[in-house]
Length: 212
Ligand code: AP5
Image (cartoon, rainbow, N blue to C red; front, side, top):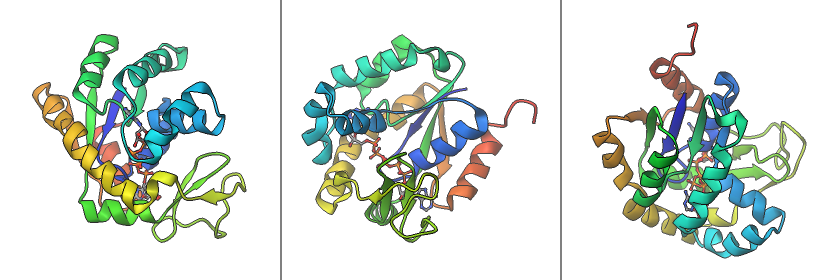
């Protein structure tokens, strides 16, 4: 199963991708997470992209496409993957089509007000990157990751000015991909408003596991 997760920031792409990756045993490839890891490790890539990401802008197509190409070349991605947050522009989608054929693009449907509520309450583990939400998906102990005990923090791009910018960028550069994949007959819409468990159940109905 070779899937793209498409949708506005904060729609729940990363949350569902982590659940699907575990259930379907395919890698979850998040370009945002690859960039954040590079920033944490202060690599040359991280130093180059930090200010862009913190401001809610997009990293250049050249850098992002090369990074995804290298990642998809790894053996664990041969039989399936979830691309979370890539492609995000038409040139990225065109480049991807030259690298691999995807089965479907799953479009997370959600209103801006829900996105703002989700992003402004998000907390992320500094150690293992697990996502939480102070109200909708709180950890058992405030500020501490249930999975690894790591410290939870607020992403720099979850501050309100960056959220507003990310929504603008989404509308102008990423939303056109909905028509792109609809024309290619690969678009699958998913209602992203219910709880994460309900979204997973809806996903499983559209993409049943082999053997089910
Ligand atoms: P990226 O990390 O991809 O950010 P994003 O697309 O803005 O997505 P988010 O991670 O913010 O949201 P999400 O949809 O994954 O939601 P989540 O599951 O966390 O990219 C970051 C940056 O990197 C970009 O801005 C850009 O600069 C750069 N970048 C990345 N890819 C790029 C590319 N291809 N080209 C150029 N630049 C690129 O959920 C959000 C919150 O809601 C969480 O708190 C969660 O607990 C909660 N939640 C999730 N699901 C539910 C639910 N069903 N009900 C209630 N709460 C929920």
